[in-house]
Length: 167
Image 1 (cartoon, one colour):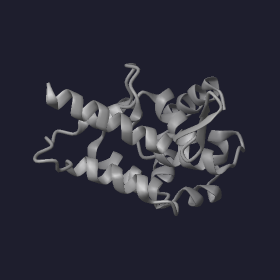
Image 2: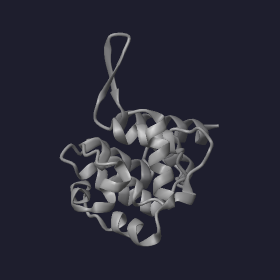
Image 3: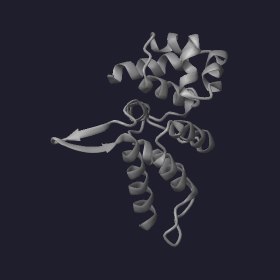
């Protein structure tokens, strides 16, 4: 999926009135979006697990909460996390992100949406869209399998959180 499509998706989402946006927000799972006409209008009929994940998370975010600063999803969480790690313990946000990383049965996206609702981080849309769309897919770098975007999000969080608090 290309960046132009994601930009168009966000633009169409921001043009939605409050009622259709509320329909997306009320969906309890990504699968529940399949039955909503607003989902199909928004995505021009594209139905895939990746698109369901992306729209499910997008439906829970206020369109004004996006930033133009090019930051990763993990860094957005680290910037919002006000807790300080003490005595080799994780902050509550760190614990939640580790739990999200460990879940493999589809609950991870629902947990991520709840965390976003709670923290209200400011995301850079292209980074968030790419992370969600390729959520569980391993990337291949120089012929070798690399991290999934879910694990990369967790690493970016720790890298940002622990380098900024140790200084």
